[in-house]
Structures are given as structure tokens and as C-alpha cells.
Image (cartoon, rainbow, N blue to C red):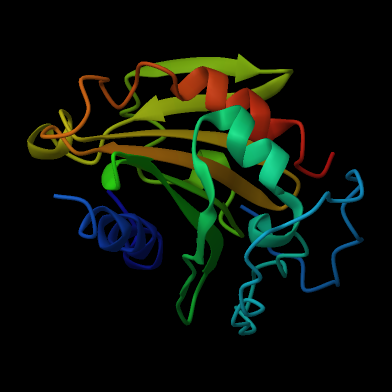
Length: 196
């Protein structure tokens, strides 16, 4: 049975899709060990924050650390960077969204985010279509529903005190690529920037 507060994580992910068609410690998390981010062409506002009782804070902001070189390596357009957070009473998701433009049209959308809900507490963990590791991190590939399977693919990885995910959504009218075709490759680019 999915707990109500965890069910909201799925709703947050569903809100991101609409644009295209645990830990109990209250201690402050230590800063993530990541590289110094490179240049970013488009600056976005800082993430909204909220205390989630029983959950760790999120010290990593993908909009800051997933720089333009990473975005290009993943196959998306850096100047399309925009914030994609979902902040609820019981959990938080801090994320960033990018588009791949073909002839000025939106062919694909990439969303990278971090949640303070651990991977094994996520409602999709047990129903994932594939369990794997990305550079030593436990990971799963999943779909929210059969209805969205042809247009969106998700890969979530374990990070300290939470989980990090990659979502690729495609516009079937402007892309022949399936959402899951390159998700492992893109997740590898994102994984390299995540805290240990």
C-alpha cells in the first residue's frame, strides 16, 4: 500500500509530464561533494524551501550544479534552463528542466531533480521495469502509467538522504526517439554531478 505522503511524489512527477503531452534525521545535511559548476547561460531563481518534518534538507540544486556543458553532453539546449521544483508539506523535490529544440520546436524535455524521499521509499521502487546501478548507485527505471509510457521515461537513483531522478519526455510529432532510448546515458552525465 502506498503511503499518502509518498503518493505525492508521484503527483509531483505527473505535474512535470503535463507540460509535454527512509530517513528520519532532522540534522542539517553536510554540503555535497561535487565539482565546481561551469558556466550557465541562463540563471534561475533559487529553489523554494520548506522544512519537511522527518526528512532531511536538500543541499544540492540541479539548476546550479548541472551546468551548460552537462546539459549539452546530455543532448539538450542550455538556454532553455528553467526551475522545476515541487515543494509539499511532507517532502520536497528540487529540479531543473531543459528542452531539446529541433527547428525551433520542442522535441524532448529533460528534467533532473533531487528529492528528500529515499529511493526504496518511493512508490515506484517495487514496480520498476528495471533495477540497475549507475556508476555504483542503486537505480530503477519506471513509468508512471501505461498511458504515458510512449511519451515519458524515468530513472531514479539513490543519493544520501534521498533520491535523484532523470525524466525524459518526448514530443512524438517532432522526435523519433523513444523516451527510454538514452536515459541511462543521460543519467550517467547527471550522476557524475551528484553528491557522494
